[in-house]
Image (cartoon, rainbow, N blue to C red; front, top):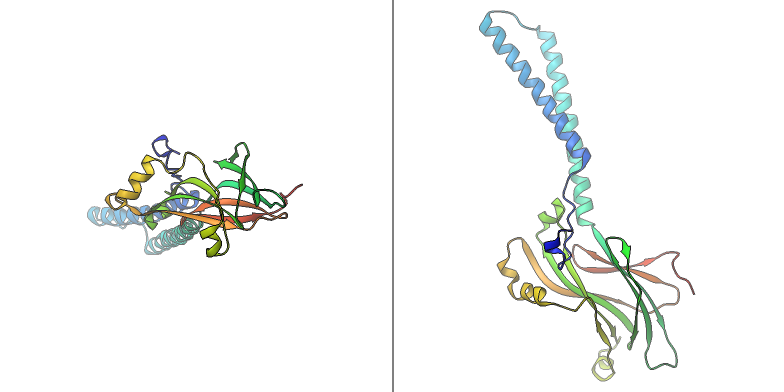
Length: 239
C-alpha cells in the first residue's frame, strides 16, 4: 500500500496475471507467423521465385490461426478470472468476539482484534450497551473499472458502538460508542465534502454492520468493494 494512500487504506492489486501474459505472447506469435508468411510471399513475387509451396502456406496459416484462437481463449479466461477476483475482493480488517453479559452495567463484552495486511494487532476490549454490537467506518468507492484493474475500495474503520433492536429503545436508553483509529479525520471530512470533485470516485459514504453477541460465534470483519461486511469464522471460539 502506497504511503500516500495509507490514511485511506486503498489497496492495489494491479492486473498482472501470468495466464494473461502467456495468452498475449501466444497471440503475438500467431500474428508474427502470419506476418512472416506475408513477407515471404511478397519477397518471392518480387524476386520472381516461387517461395514456399501452397500446402506449406496453408499449413503455416492454420498453425498461426491455432495460436491466435488458443491465445484468445486463454485471454478471455484470464479476463473472466480477473473480473471474478476484482468484484469479489474483500480485505479482513478485524476479528470480533462479542458475548452477552448478565448482572453488569453493560450488555455486551466485546473483544476486537484489528487486522492489517493479514497481521493481527493487540486485542482491544469494549463494554457496550445495547442488544447488538456494530462496527463501521468511512468508505471511498471508486468506479467499477478501477476495481477490475485492481484498485480497490478505500476505507477507514472508525467506530464500534451498541445498537438497540427497537427504535423506541434507541430513543430512551443509554448508548455507548467508541472511536477507533482516531475516528473520522480531516482527510475523510474533506473527501465527504468534495467527493464530486475527484475523478474516478463513485461515492464517499459511511456504513456499518451489526450482529447479536454470541457465545458460539466469532466474526471476521471485512471491507468489500461496497463497504463493510461480516462473516462467521469457524473453529476459533474458545472459552
